Image (cartoon, rainbow, N blue to C red; front, side, top):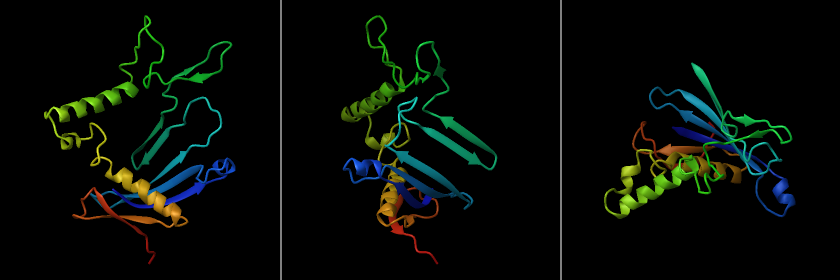
Length: 190
């Protein structure tokens, strides 16, 4: 579970356009393994200021553990296309199919459409009384209960930025195995 968040940012591009906001934000998050108490750390960066690129947004994930690593490049999905007379391109074949088949929309199975469909189906089943919102706390869709940690990390990051990079501790009630942060406080160095 996440236990501490420290944020840094860069600025300049948005400010030059009259917007008082960060260009990019980086969060360093310390995680605690609740089964054995070991610590890990993750670095998350989000930027809405980027030069023209071969993909709409660079989306990368890298995990290095004690027994292996995972390296994903979601922006490229492992599929690139080179054609004479056209610029080299990366395609995202599963997110959305924009071209019609026989004149009709044919992107129903892309995950961009499927994510909306799953959400709408969940709403319909709640509205008809077949299910209640807590039935979806299993991770099948994002709910307030499945996004507690992510929301707490983002809030702690904002608090850290507003305090010039002061680390923020995520606190939990209900014992060492609780997964829902209940409070965020500035870290006090001993």
